[in-house]
Length: 88
Image (tube, rainbow, N blue to C red):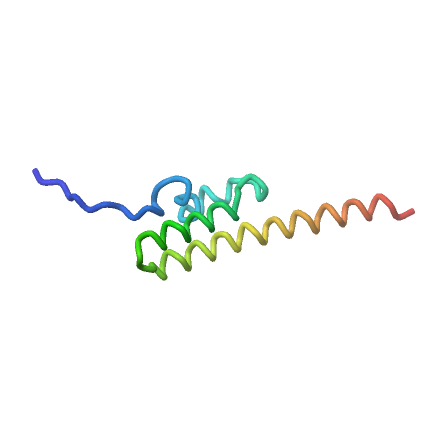
């Protein structure tokens, strides 16, 4: 019985893996994830490797963009609620 010795890329390990597992990312509250940290540390790790994985980078940008959009929607919702209480 032989086992494969292929090493998974760093981004399949926590904390970056959440950006590749959309079913888990969708369950996290918009403000419950530090996008800035994840993106900066992803970029640092990619720089250490000395090569760019464009496919992985695109997935990270897409998933973090969706989470950022969810934040914007939640802010808009809160603003609308606030102004609806202020109107007579």
